[in-house]
Amino acid sequence: MVKQTEKIGPTEMAPEDNPMDDDPHGECAFEIHRLQARVTELEAAARNSCTAPEGSYCFIRDGSMWRCTEPGFVNLQESVAGFGATFDEAYADFKKGCQQRADEYVEQYIAGRNQQSGATP
Image 1 (cartoon, one colour):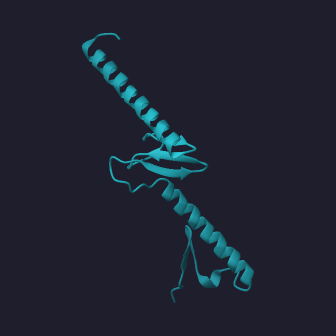
Image 2 (spheres, rainbow, N blue to C red; image 1 turned 180 degrees about the horizontal axis):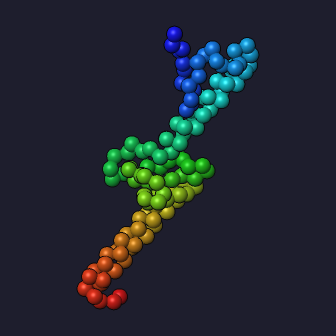
Image 3 (cartoon, helix red, strand yellow; image 1 turned 90 degrees about the horizontal axis):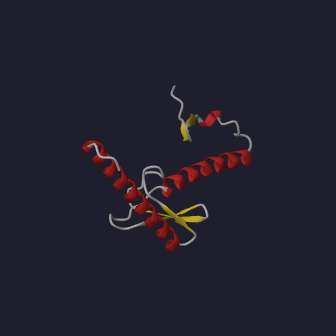
């Protein structure tokens, strides 16, 4: 006979194996805990998702600050992001980060060309 199971987070448990079968309050606490874990998972996914079209900006609440990114944001190491208490502050910080990233690329490009030609900066 095959047991019917229900998905509970990363593990599976057969309903008859639930240790809280005789305690209605325990079952509620169990369900609340399961739902809180799911909410946390969905919030984490939503923080890093943006469905804005290319050429626009995404403003996502990140803790007590707003985060401004472009669509396609990967993470803070690979993508530019700006933070601020308001949309304007987050956008200004984002633009500053874009300028810094562009400056780094230019410096790397010049260093690479100088190395190829044997010139020193």
